Image: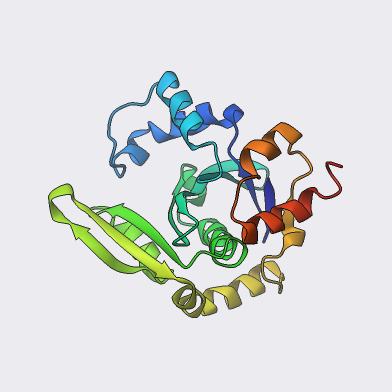
Length: 222
């Protein structure tokens, strides 16, 4: 699955990309803010990918100007409670403090709240990661639970707060990208998804969500 919006491309993580992610995830700049501090081996990365490559976890490579600059994800989707956990990390220093992560986050927020119809999103951050804390707060997240002994804080975000808090950001996006439309199904591309991948990654969802995925594949697989 690919999403193209605001000049950003989000491509669902495949096994071909996991070594790239592992290398950047192991860098000192990124690792210092992660809860797991040890170096990740190729074998560990492969095992991790096999555990998250399913309908309950959605990891996407962020591409900008045909360059892979980071990853954004939601995990542990709970389709009964309509909740998920999210995160983002940018490994390309050129774009770390740019507007691109904001664009990716807005796209992903629209994907979660509008397409997947989630009611609440959680984000867990290390207490010392002030940059990310400021970032999620700007997006509308508020403190949900604190874990001082583990040096982490969990934030939560609802759809109503997200759209209220990002109203000014969206106006700026329109000025920058000249794209006046919200994320829609026309921004999705499933043309490269094989039938095998469809059965593994785009089947077995609750009915309200399955119907949406089925529309994309109506003409692809008859």
